[in-house]
Length: 329
Image 1: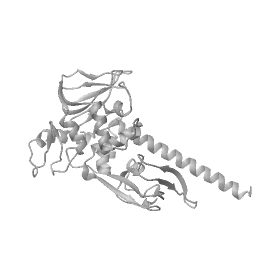
Image 2 (image 1 turned 30 degrees about the vertical axis):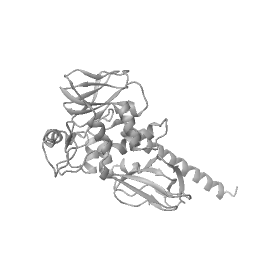
Image 3 (image 1 turned 90 degrees about the vertical axis):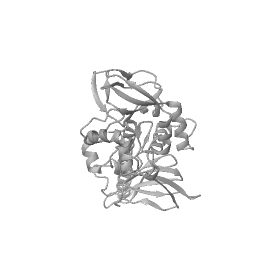
């Protein structure tokens, strides 16, 4: 559950397992990893992996091979978090309550409840994060109800501490950041350092081209300008959209049934003054986060839908111009 105390599963397993559970709540866990994860959650805290700190405030921070599961910023938050115990049936919060905290489950299970229908829409286990959705959506109130399904021990982190750490993760955040900017900062904060790589690019340099195969990753623009291009068979390449600092790409492949399929788009640097810079995040680590955070999952799905709509619009416009040209108008 959560950010997998186990080694990362394959993309095929992730895509298959996540279809077993609804994606309506923060902290969605992959069902196939639950039982094994729970046994490791407690065992990891007793391991000594070559001097690496394997447990912070009760939360396992490495897998059995000693690989980090979280970024330094997230661990800094966890070190200052408060432990709380909840009895079975006790509410963490209810729909409409003020959003002041986010939570990390150390033990036990939590139920996500749709109060409109009084139904449980998700069950969250050890390692899952919840309550961050309202904070990253700039909301003051909760949109879901969560209660303890069993006795639970959780870590709670106040929103002020979260926002402070997000600004440390991305110092260029504006005074009033958008949801997308907050979520991308959250991603950058949570994923481990070894899963991130910063790359500087020149004008005209391709990040990847349509049809390329390679390891899938999420890319965040740190500096510069980029363009997204697409080409249909027997047609000219058309520009779908532009990207600037604080925006991301690569999610189309990551959200597909097989992330290793050929790329559907081309991304190229268009910065004439100075260099462009992108931050790439390993696909497996991104998927661990995608499958435990509703706000990340929702944003990526919305971005993919928008990218598809922009693509259809650009191709339709190109087709109309082509017909206009053929008619000699």
